[in-house]
Amino acid sequence: MTSASAAPWSRLRLRQTAHVRDLCAETVFTAAHFIQPFFVVEGLTGTEPIAGLGDDNARLDEAAMLKVIEADLKAGVRHFLMFAVPAEKRSHGLTFEHAARPVRAIKKAFGDQLHLWVDICLCASTDHGHCAIVDRRGDIDLPPTLDALTQYAVAVADAGADGVSPSDMMDGRVGAIRHGLDAAGHARVPIMSYSTKFASKFYGPFRNAADSSPKSGDRRHYQIDVRARTDAMASSVRCAEEGADLLMVKPGMTSIDLIEPIKAATGKLVGAYQVSGEYASLVLLAREGLADFDAALLETWHVFRRAGAAYIITYGARRARSLGFGA
Ligand code: PBG
Image 1 (cartoon, helix red, strand yellow):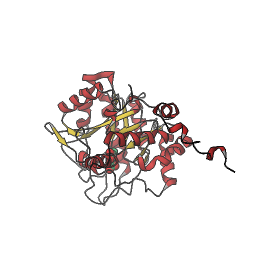
Image 2: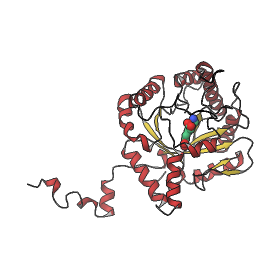
Image 3: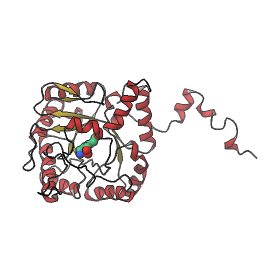
Image 4: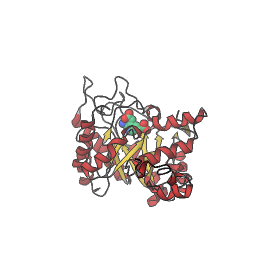
């Protein structure tokens, strides 16, 4: 006996025309669901390309950054994620003016036209390239690390940042940052935490852009092992308990299975970061003539939304409106 759902045309019928496919589409999103990352580099003059991230992502000086943001605003982008790279690297006594200065410039030029998130991590600032202050043996020294991360968050909030986004993966950082922001009068500044962030081979183009590769070893002693589902869940739960407002999985495409479980466990919105290596894989496929870039990008975005992502951080956010998502 053939059941009704196994009958000929039973699944095919609603896939036959664009109109009926659109009627049945369940992933709906707008330009407001996208966050555009950018890199501002202290001491740089003009722009420098970033291998793998296409023609429209570059390392920027402050003037170029303002031009890019102006164009992105015209293209419908509302959320930006800033990565600030300092001219000078140190092991201790880190300062954050290299990030506060561009924040002030952006808010002066564009005010409330945009929501500016600032990535909070130490890897672009430290001379060893790790996301923490380390002791003489090279081990993570947690108390000064949490102090530095908190100072970073307060410095950019003082400068006018609309939100902060800690990506370092240290225990206790969301709680420390929340406390520091509140004490500095920034109780209304939200924290978008990189709450489930795996150690990954897909961060390569980013590390060149942010000049943040570890000089020795790797980040497996603080980022999550891809095999460790329990740790991945617990890390997001921990961030939620410490006061993170928004949670995130990263790399996005290899973590979509965790979006709904994290949402269910925390009651918080969970976004996905389509990281540099994932985005570059599409750039390279297109460059080899093996895929249409925009169509492939769109496919991945629908998958993020289908998997339950509340928002998407992607190097292609500025293409969202031209790909059909109104502001
Ligand atoms: C900083 C940081 C990284 C990314 C975002 N913040 C790199 C890393 O952890 O090494 C990756 C983003 C990307 O690849 O696009 N810790």
